[in-house]
Length: 272
Image 1 (cartoon, rainbow, N blue to C red):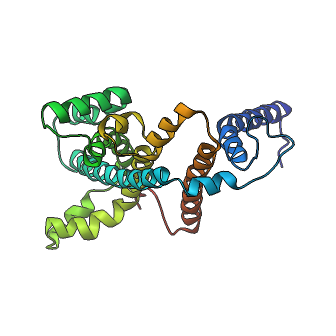
Image 2: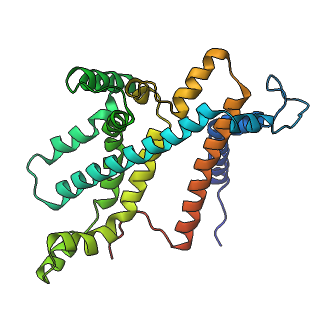
């Protein structure tokens, strides 16, 4: 057994220390908010006095309930639209010989380089000035999809770039119609990529403030309700809300990780 070089051991130790500090820097604010959500005094919770009063008050605040329902609808709608159009775009660009493949791919990811405020304002001006539409949940879903398609496109593209499209040709050679070939050959192979894109775009739209703020009108979502409540100060109920949302996201990713380790779910196509 080869001896470990002291220099390599020092580098490994330093890398581990830096990685640990990075995780502390990224996740300490989240855990601190969760800690404040069960504290009686949030100014300096020491010595700690635990309480569940803020969660109880959050449970009876109807504006947060309406905001939660609208945020879920916004996330599902935007996630479904983004995944659908991004999936069609990736399949079209990779499966068929497209002459302007590079410029078209750049066009799909270009919203990533536009500020959320500009997307929200431009969507509002187009809906009001051209389509004569007021701020509705549907217009907010479309506006968030403009940004979500770029993320979904990158997620699906990164996982389908290795897909062997000759499998589709084989299915059609044996008499399958294009729709049946997609349903029985393509979709069973690419659905993990579609699911990953949907989860990302759902979370983006669920937590979005700037784009939704300009396109919702008076319809509340969790981010807009939380933003509006800041006018009256930083309330402990917001700590409880943030802890619940972050806890839900954490549980979802833990469940997905366990399913991946068990082999139930496998993200990305792996050619044989």
